[in-house]
Length: 458
Image 1 (tube, one colour):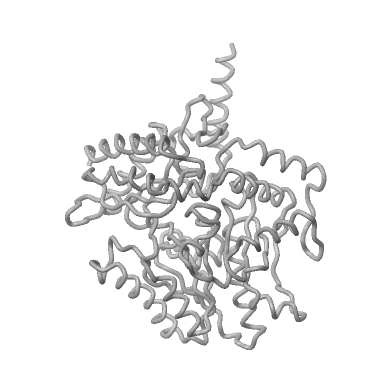
Image 2 (tube, rainbow, N blue to C red):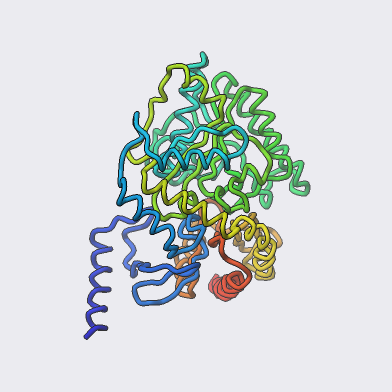
């Protein structure tokens, strides 16, 4: 009887998921069973049937400390029992104050003022608004434009979507916010110039930012938004010297540099912030996801002292969100940082990232694998039709490969990762920071089997 009741319950969940739940970035025309995850423990998650999956994407680049951490749940419960909610509009509460102080110690350089949001898109939106108001109150109101990179994803709200460089997800919502300019990214595998010289390619990619600033008119450009390692397109690391050159260009033209670290912060690259790994100083840092390891929604931007100064003289930053700096989320973030420190998670990533890359590199002998790239615990595997010519798949082929086979086959094999077609087809991996060689072997074994079968079906 128990199993029968469970089957009925599972059937009801499927029916209700198809009838009532609007999943994000998901085609509702699909009639397949919706994967329903009901439990997590460490690096593993379990579906409604009890089947186990290795979470090779940390949920969505988020679950840094892994699943089922009772200390984070207990921190949330304690805070909810004491003060479940109060805004930080004209008021403050201890958790927001303590977390802001803690983050100011961790953020790069003089990014000492913390503005809280509830997620990454809001953090990016806030950064653009701050840049525009900063220049308005300092006598340069024409500085409103922003520069970002092709295929880069910076969020889904209208401002963040405008900064985003993924055309297909923007077109239905046009016209977007004016003044968002795109420049080349750092995909060296498909470098249009200097394809045999990584540093020269990096100089060219950085100089394209200066060319865009000059083309638009430096007096009209407010900020450059860059991820330390670009996510969309499949994990593009910066060439040596790239960010130092970008910083020089921004300084030369009075443009702000925003480090969008919604994915890259909190250990994904082996440091609290990617700017630390790549040794550059941003004016604003955006963050979310790993800030709480997903145990409660929270985002933020950290702002340099120079940008805060005008707002200490009587100006108000005319922006805010109801749940920014939520007491429960702030308490979870503090407990999350405690786990990082107690368990040495940053050190774990730095010690094991070489083994992670080496494990993924073993897949390079497969005819479908063109490039393996990334940093820390953040990697993409680009898939190709021809390794020698680097020929990619057309749209129909990508559809059949990624959605028609790979996404489902990887899940059925017990690995949660991302088969992504924002750019050339890639499989992305970003496991929890607690992972080590044992989990790397599980991932590569599954990937080898599924990618081999994918090649046979081409």
